[in-house]
Length: 169
Image 1 (cartoon, one colour):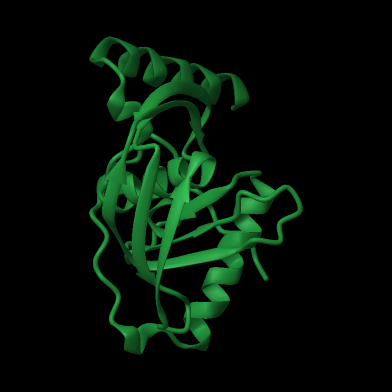
Image 2 (tube, one colour):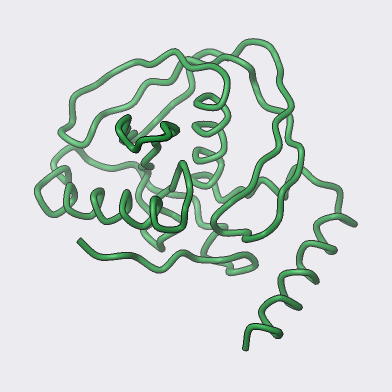
């Protein structure tokens, strides 16, 4: 396995809308890439990673909200088919390091997708899993959690990250 570089805001590639995956693409090479994404996510550390974040602009993501890394989920061509309620959650992002903000999301969702073998499934999710799915699906649409912030707060985030990069160099 190998770790993949994670794109960071304001990299314009994070704004790319991911393309749907043809089931014929779900081969051994794809599944090896999925494993690399899990390893990258765990190493970061994170609980979700969209392919867009590792400069792969196909429509899929990996998620594991468990503490023991034993609930790996792969969502290929995910689609939310039902939403219910509202919740505010403090979110962070591997592509926007050190920044957290309150974001309003649906409390419960139902998502349909394919797994890494092309098998269709439907999943009802709430709580942290629902938030994570919605967050990662935003990435597939070229959207970041900071887009939910005011323009002033987004500019503050951009300046803070630029300052962090300068001090790290």
